[in-house]
Image (cartoon, rainbow, N blue to C red):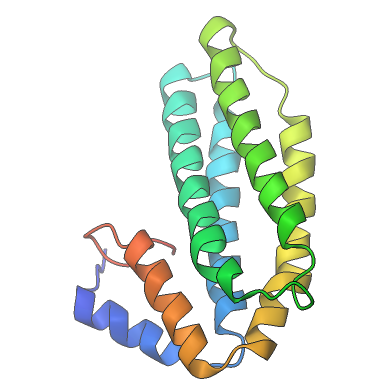
Length: 166
């Protein structure tokens, strides 16, 4: 498998931040990664405890990185009148992290768990971000602001083996 070095990876995303919808593309790509991890987790509930635990931990870790990037990097560019849904998004992040903790605790004492509430919340949350927040940031931020955001996200996401949000 091709694993780009740090310079090649940066060059790829150097071009991306100049595009009109760079934030939307990058964050939507990470949503897809989270969805893949969630599918793996769901497929192993009650079947393969090791894979189920591993996929839940990976899902939580990627979700924490995603949340960190949004709250510590992207949301600082949201002015109250331009991003009124930011408080709602932060509250949803907290709820989803709490749900993931509850799921983990429940799985420590039983083989199966109901994740329908988590699935509903994450679906609503994703739609709000992809249809409203990310396009709004792509439209309102200048290229230097986008460059800053994408560079910071890259710093959080880079794991030494190449770009991590593929």
